[in-house]
Amino acid sequence: MTVERSTARTFLFIQIVLLLWWAAFYPGLFSRDSALYLTHTLEGPWVSDHSVLYDALLWLSVKATGEVGVVTFLQTTAMAAAIAFLAQELKRLGAPRLPTTIAAVLLPFAPPFGAFAVTFWKDVPFTACVIAITAVTARIAKDRGPTRATLVGLGAAMLGAGLFRANGFLVVAIMVVVLLVIGKGARARLAATGLVAAGVPVLLTHLVLPQVGIVPPSRTFVYHTAYGDIAVAWKERTDLFTTQDVALMAEIAPLERWWRGANCNTINPLIWREDFDWRRSDELAPQVMALWQRILMEAPDQVIKTRLCRGAIAWRPGPTGGRRAARPTTSHTGGSRGSTSAPTRSNATPSWRAST
Image (cartoon, rainbow, N blue to C red):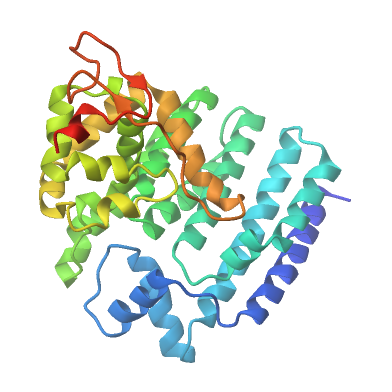
């Protein structure tokens, strides 16, 4: 059996299973975000907090059929194609053929995947794009460089990731770094592909869409996952923060909020609270991102651990209360930087909490 026929059969099997999910929950599962899409797209005004491309697909589906079933149907097809493509490239890279195929065809039976694929949510096509990017990355690693067709496919998947999420360009940037490491001899072409794919959504959001009245999302909304990384680091590694860092955070929200919002599973307890100042946060976003970049450079393991925890909700059943960390004690509000004693992990109340 050729690789193409094997991949086609894998795709068809996954598609059939996902269509059963689609039929069971027709026209799809909904969340609060889904309701927001319907409200601002059908009643107005349009906003770019989520994805204008996804909103456009919603609008077309409703205008043509009166419902959103077409969108969720397309999602099942995109996810089936992405998984089949990834399985194919992993096998080309050296993964055992039979176990890889079995894993691929069993995946749509898992509720976290099957239900997700038929949820009316812009993160579904975004995830399909990320899976496709991963598959193309595996192909580049196997071929020791990209062909023209591979670059086109990579650019399309990266562009989709940027168009389906306001902060998708950050994922593209990370993948470009990975590709520059493995794509020896083609770094310039890979960098150019990534730059264009990441830049187009940003230009559309900030230059083109405002011309038709679609306002760009706030900086806090775009960078909110970085805020979450900072909150968890503040709770677990106060030694990474200077007095200036803590003063910056305090201008946006009380330090108590940063501590209570340090949940690696969700950003909600931090930014969606009344004592979090969105206006000031948007103004200080460049400084906040500079802080995040420094934490990433000085303690990449901390950020990676937080991201892995956040991603674990995709496969971990049951409630996700987040990692619990002991409340750190420090000699002053800025952690151990510039202080005479390093923070210790204990159940004692940190000094900044005692003073607020």
